[in-house]
Length: 122
Image (cartoon, rainbow, N blue to C red):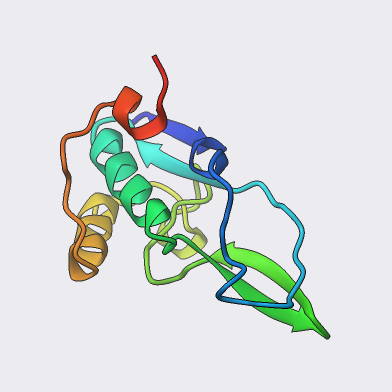
């Protein structure tokens, strides 16, 4: 199975989390999600929908009026190319199914949008 990195694409849009954690400061961070090449388009589509709804990241308070951006653990994220499910990596033959189920539980389903429609790129 070929694994591709989704690096930065979901973070091109500003995180508008002021209302969620008013008064808590946090620094920008870069996150990488690895997607399987064969089903990656479906996963990317679902991730983008959830990102647009503000559900991919959360702010964790780590100190007095300080916060840290973190993955929202309601969705399974693959942050490593290797190491298997216990290390948030591949191989994990059930990952796409688990991801689809988690998104469906939140009301998201593949909507068929193209890369251009999802990210405004040509």
